[in-house]
Length: 204
Length: 204
Image (tube, each protein chain N blue to C red):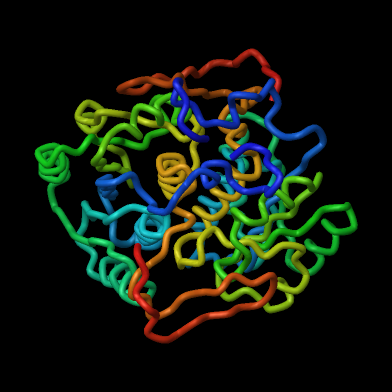
């Protein structure tokens, strides 16, 4: 970011391709999903995670085939690789991620300020980003390597996930190409332009 | 942003106080709210707008006193100035904003890439940021001064609003102080620390 003649977001100025650092892997764990209450917000968390550079999402809480199918359908239609799964035990999901070498980032308004810790978080190669729905168990705070706040104000886990990923990836996620998309949009000043054909596979 | 020794978000390095440029004013217009379907997502849009530096929100679509009261309650409890209102006609809301000198930014996956146009948008003093719920009328695209896409992927109007404001304000919104808050959070590595007392009024 920062002012510059082109008005472009600053980290893009020195990027030579590639969305993530080599080998970086980010999964979002949606904690404590409630089928009736959270259906749309959970879908937004998953789709924002996909659009903004995460590699996959794990749903926890009530199993919800409608949400999982909806997210899979978007990924299938709009391209890119995005893993979607369900895990009934958040403890198992966190333990598995840690065993695989991931650092656990819990997004919470009570945590350290994102602008203070994002530099340390960026040094990690694998991340599990935990995003709560209802009240988050105290153990999540203790198991997390980082409790991170996108402001200490009450707002939205969708917004927190989006800004966290955007800061983590320093704007590079906006340049991402989605491979094997059936639909893609051509940016327009006004109106809509959608390309709907088997697109030539591009490096993701 | 960009790597730096402190791991801080880059625009903060050269900021000497103040969240917005002098005189800058940002209102979010939530278009076409549907009471049953959008209750929670609209609330997330409004709260994310407040937390991330907007000065107010205008609700359009079905009038929803529960959503409006909820957002007002958060603003009252957590401080800062945040205007909340309802306008049955989105045309009137846009016309009024334009009459007051605002530029209209419509967030849509079909628009120009945020990273390409944010520099031009930042030059404006007043903005009305239009965020749709259901299908957005074609006239909104034509009336908007900027149709802006936070990726051309389907995701979330909450995430799009958040990233747009974050880019517009270049991370300064994360440093914002909320005046006259009844509750405030003290950032913690783990656990929760809430200050609940009449806080000394601080410059917003």
